[in-house]
Length: 193
Image (cartoon, rainbow, N blue to C red):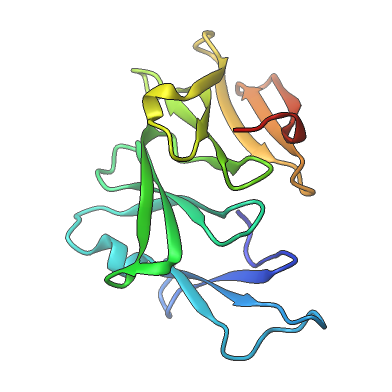
């Protein structure tokens, strides 16, 4: 996502610690008069800590949950093969210095989009050729094997991606190649866990 991000509750931002690489994602809460609450800075994810013990660590995406923004989902490639696991975590509960992982979605392309609330998460998986080709809906608290496939792109010249509109009510499904592409909007208000 583009940083900083502002919502009704928080301002989300990144820091690099003087290096060209992102090293942490944080947030400040907002007061009633739309100013930052002094002393409310919270580190959501310390990427240097996350990388400890791994030869490779690439954070692909990090998204706060749609409704409460209390939970985060972030994707990480620890192998360098551009296959990402998505971790849904609660930054308020720490496992050492990292947020406590609530659940994990394995082997994705790294893109994350929340549903209209904190119960649905959308992600994309790759085929054997590492082409993003299936869009899935995951209900938090259920096994990944129960996830619903929304879109499968069988044409090897095209790939699938997802995102959300600015107001957050629609999922953008992108199917594209080097030249032609199409986007479809799905009204998230019609979907529920």
